[in-house]
Length: 149
Picture: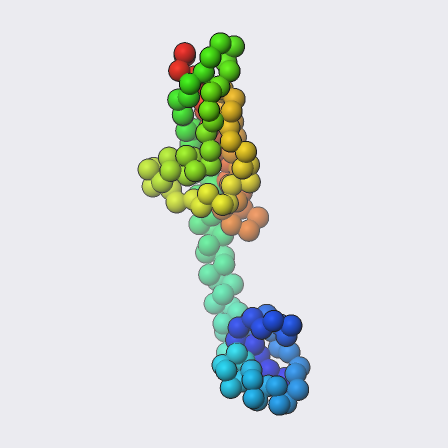
């Protein structure tokens, strides 16, 4: 029996997939628990509508992420750190500190989305990459200024 999955089911398939399973498994487990619906003409039409809506939502999120990436390009964040002779830095700036500084400016970014996860320990400007959405990467300029400057 062919069914359309409403949720991800281990070892069967992902949400929205049409899979062929045994009749008993489909009726007694998948359909009974609301994990799937039988494949009919009407259910296929509903699936097409849902896929189009999902594609529109994905396109909207990607457009917002691209706009945010343009906004991040213009930002240079400055952090003051203790430094010694010859520009030696005591301490570092972490992704958590960068996230907090961005939040103060009204930009919400998850600290887990940073691609450059190493703490910044050099004076000057460092470019930090952030994955805002699938295949959309924003770059923030982070400048460390020593306390002696």
